Image (cartoon, rainbow, N blue to C red; front, side, top):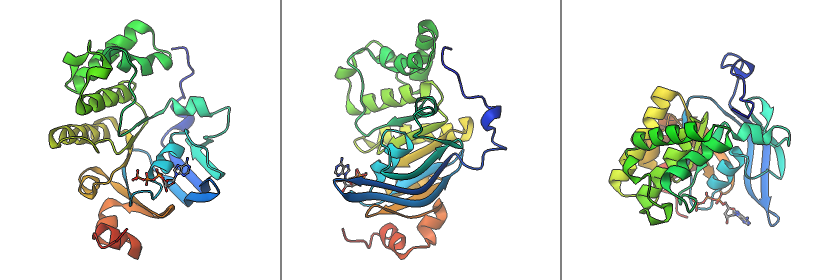
Amino acid sequence: MGDKKIEINEYSSENLTSLYRLKNVIKQESGQTILSVPDLTLKEGEVYGIIGPSGAGKSTLVRILNGLSQPTSGEVYFLNKELFNKKNLRQLQKEMTLVFQKPHLFNTTVLENVAYGLKVRGYPSKKAFKIAENSLKEMGILELKKRKAASLSGGEAQRVALARAMAFKPRVLLLDEPTGNLDPGNIKLIENKVNSLYSQEHTTVIMVTHNMFQAKRIATRGMFIYQGKLIEEGPIDQIFSEPESNLTKQFVNGEMIF
Ligand SMILES: Nc1ncnc2c1ncn2[C@@H]1O[C@H](COP(=O)(O)OP(=O)(O)OP(=O)(O)O)[C@@H](O)[C@H]1O
């Protein structure tokens, strides 16, 4: 591969105290603080569910974690390196991928869409297509490989976006409401995929979801964001049964009016 891959021993799990570390992170837009995270550590190999009302700042957080949106102030470390340092950003971003609720697919075939992410990571074309085919097979959609992306249904497009994200086996998979527009069958398929990524590949998954049942079903840890503030982060059972904050309690019990 053309790109320097991050050496495992450079960031071995033994030396790694955190996958992400955020300190005093503030994001402002038009003079307003839309996200404030005083101190947050995210560990490798967990499935994080990010919950909170609409407009709370959930997407803002995943865009920061993916390196797409630089905080106005504060520090973000990924694998113990400053994520937004110009020297590190592109290299570190190759370890992660973000899938949106409405997938952004290129106007080419499904197979070319899935191979793209591998090619930009330096895989030779033939190998990229082979891995892409395999990834489509794993998502159960190999028969779509020659279809133009624009002709796909919402559920199919989301599965293609996930096949593309998973093809290069990212260390971190960020999902922003990935099942928001899908029917129960497609939701189940995607949740099963997240479960197997976690249990078999030990991929860290960080997922925004409006669906609290979904967070309960698939997350190992939860984060509650409210009015631009990270209120709490902890084991998912604790978030739902014994949250530290009264705000979290009101939200998970459906008592919050907003
Ligand atoms: N570029 C921007 N300029 C101004 N305000 C913004 C900008 N981006 C986000 N915001 C505001 O910041 C707040 C947080 O937005 P964000 O998309 O992170 O929320 P969210 O929790 O993901 O919401 P939803 O669940 O509705 O998707 C919202 O009030 C939003 O309107």
